[in-house]
Length: 481
Image (cartoon, rainbow, N blue to C red; front, side):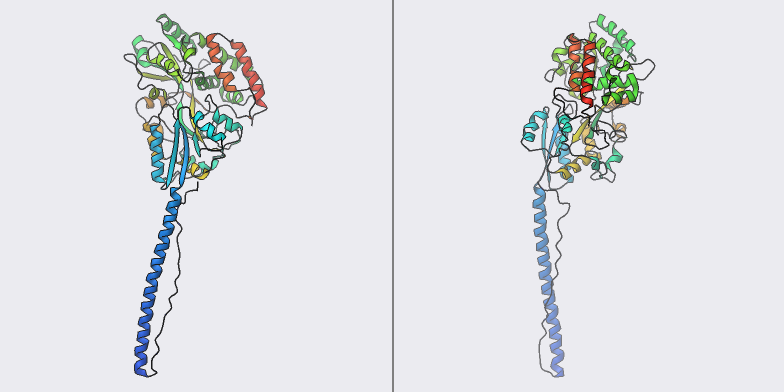
């Protein structure tokens, strides 16, 4: 596949006209006539040759234009995108808009809810997408695997690119702080490998209508949470549920930052020796352990990719009060039945320490380019386009909000509620674990998050869980990039 030509090659031609002068008698009478005839002949010849030259130039330019068009028609940009709660239609619209603004480029889309299963076989065979939209933190961990293998192309230069169709640099449109975390610079070296996409304040969703009906106050501390849990239990309602253990990433990150602040949080993310055995970490493990006692009984059985919506449905049916999630949840459950008077509510994760503000981890999805991608230049152009007002409007219509300055001012309805969480005092938390080279049999996500099912079911103790996390951290520390 060839790079897109930004303009056709211009043909410059220079034509030399040969002028023929007629020869006559040497007499004065005939010489004047002959000179006049010669001049006329020269003018005619020059005009004819000029016309021929123009025709030749036009033909050549047309031929080159055809060649440029043919070359442009050959350009196919392969884009693989995860189909999340926002649906697939927005990707089709954005692809069409990109094609419209980039004549000759055809976007070949692959969209799937299990994107890893679709693209991994081709990638193993050497056929890579040019652009991939696939976040970290998924069970298949494809993004993390390629990161560990140093198989991604750096994107720092994209930040300096001008947004296609606009006159502003990408870095000047992205909300401050989004490209300064391990969530975009996975090696902690200041080089961007993930482009931030679709940010979502994460927190606890609940039925605000139920709270109004019961006269309950929304808890702001964990002591208030436990008190509310006891009240709800008397009415046959559980305090808590979760879609899958994967949703404990944002939830746990918020708790860690709340427990010990930014420095402590970063120490956890970089596997500092003994950090998971510290007092602040112990608070978090014990808090989740107690929350397990308040978790709805069917949660573990449905906490998988096939049945996770059943756990989310518990909130809509008033069978559980709180569910950790991101702003895509209402769209994901838009067609689901719900209790009378249901109204979405959203709150920060209560502070671990008394007297402090709650926390909300800002989850954002990532877009990246495989190092083996064939069309990296056009791939970067596509990523830069993701921050255009045109693309952002298409995404926002589907509920996906780009981390662009001023986007929150354009939102309405539920999204206005969700994205105002920081305006209401919640502390923002960003960035995940530092990337490491692969360590066989060791996964912090499996150890820290997936174990929650075993804590809820009672198959594992909190103390054993904490010890296993510290052990995994020890093994990953030396492998950190």
